[in-house]
Length: 599
Image 1 (tube, rainbow, N blue to C red):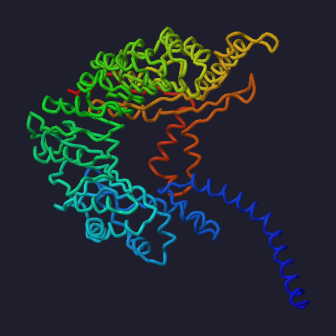
Image 2: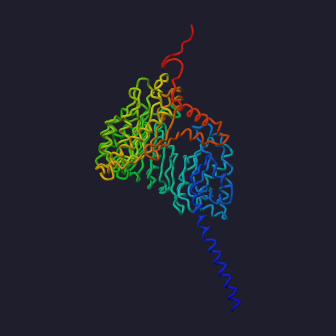
Image 3: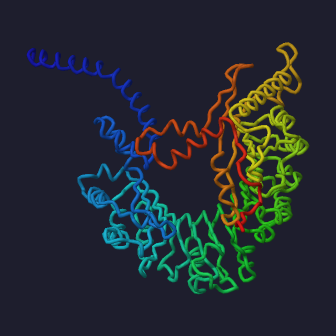
């Protein structure tokens, strides 16, 4: 017994010492580990390959990187008939090794890391012989078998229609729906060629993006694509795009578009709806008005292809809409401004709208300010490219009215002009001294693509951007001091202006126009003079604002020798050099002049 006690005593004391020694390092190591995990998650950019290179540094980094790398799997070369360069790509051979590794029972730990699987788009007629194993794997029984071995799978995304070489898509979707984990399915590349009915409802499909040519696709297939919508009882996100005339592969199409929806079925519980160039015809009007769940719709996006008719049809039906985005190509939204005002007016009665984004739509301010709960507002018009045409911007009176009726605004995205060859200091002062809850202000500045021979004054460059930022924050600070008052005699309006200093963005570029209408010289000039400045409030009153040039930051971030000589790197160089002095007028003949042959 004494010997046994002496034997047990040191053992217990030894284990206690080990426990005390290991307690403190465990805490510090776990803290450092968590920090590294956050850093590595922010580095997760598949195109750079930095994650894979970091995993080879050490065992510790490998342990951090492996769960992040296996979290999302991307399969396929990403082929598209619209991109000829994609036809030269081949499916990476690493795909077979990856599948074999995940199907091996000894790698159960790796299987648990996989949560998202993405299948890229590829056209069968572009596929090379190297893609045959991948195609057979996706369209056969191998892909469902792989998914069944992933216990934590929560999302499967298809960036392309699975109607390849006559393969019935209905064969693969139910197999995914029957998985024990019930992963969510997103169909992001439907083409309106669905001529079969699934054997059972696709209950796991939550997102459907379809681009359909209603004027050339066979009517039975077009109706079949519409029936796919009703076979997804849990569909929450729907995006429908109609091909424009220039996007069609053939110019021989029927003048009357095919019907997309028939019958008396009700729409699934759609909360997010996007329509691009989509028209609602008489045969479908009943379904949209009486069978659509308008009480559930929270987000609606229209455009940039014409959707004027949809605004008139839907006016008065959405009652719980929180986000509305309406955009059009340059010069094509003016005819629908009245329809937009008619759509916004009934929404003001329920006051549910929180975010409103209008691009190339300019309506009166009164329908907008009726939505007093607005948090985010964007009113942006593309810079006009026709000489003599002026861009419409919000006036000082409009801003005062907006500040008075929409006090909860946190984000503003607006345009500014140069009246009388000066910066709109009165507009900037109104923005700086109002909008008490503003967190971010974005102002778009013209570069002068309407007349390439004349330089807009004042010039938009480093110096002018710093001047605007300096005056904006100075006016903001003075207004904050005025509203706060003194400690002994606080101002009665102190609650109205808490002194929050927003993040200021000054930018130029972003030309939203149809390609046939854009002249190459103007497009090149606009691209070379695209600039974005991020300006943050000074650390103390009267100090200099923090100033960042986005294109300069992107240029400095490129370190790889192979990327230094790329076209993107040279484009960034031109933008950075151009913004130092601002846009310069092009030399040559005047606008509109034509070359004549010598007689």
